[in-house]
Length: 335
Image 1 (cartoon, rainbow, N blue to C red):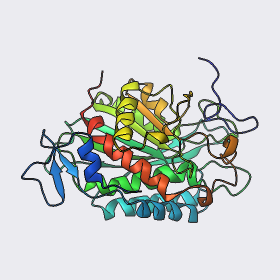
Image 2: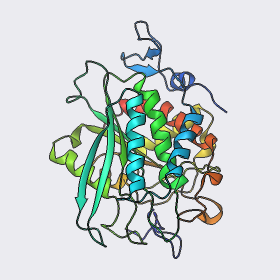
Image 3: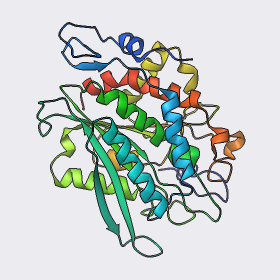
Image 4: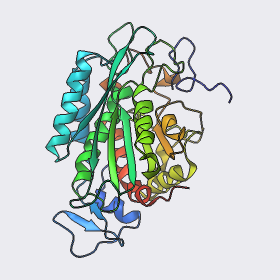
């Protein structure tokens, strides 16, 4: 494999790693047809799966972002990250979900063992046998990189987490009867070292995938969709060459249906991120990331990664596109 640019492996002397229409209309544009018999606040597609009819709320998402930034720097193992975890769990419970933790120690960390904790919640339709249903994973990392200054990670860590929390509210309003939608908040994505160097990265996703394989559940995972660095006020997603092409095409079609294709860039990159852990065991995965944060990417992993360089509009764009693509991702047939 050629040596990629950082997250990527990219900026010299930086750590390498890498307008609202309703959701109802977005779902209609992806081919969902309403049917009778749906519960309050839901519609159904032709297969009988419930579809959310409440809109993605970018103001709610923005408040989630503000709350994270208020905790300050949130590297793995920090008290601030534990406060963030408790916030995630409270927000998930508030929309009727049951969050659980995956906590484990990483003795291989370069400067001594660290404790890492993923938070996840499964959206399952009432009465469905979740142990037998296929799984679609929507994930993000919620830790921030430990740097030599107060790094609050509004975009890198905060934005994906904020969007996924708001997606949880929308998706939980009408669970798909045929699929488990797993909302996975990953810890330990950021390298402990200044540079991204295997295996010092992706601690949380590597652990989660290993557990999937050990439990015999990996084959049930249809797809993994990763959200990372999607709050950039000048949002243009970077197509990732590692990502599954079919999952990306579904997303492109959804973006086009909403008139939002301008937010997907044309220049593809090799991007190293949490989706690689899923790809490593044969699970199709897609990284949705804007890896051009500010002029010449100058806000990435700097003190300038703040709310001032993010926007509610960007959170809204991503939320709407993900919701528009989700029904097709849930129907996706893994090769």
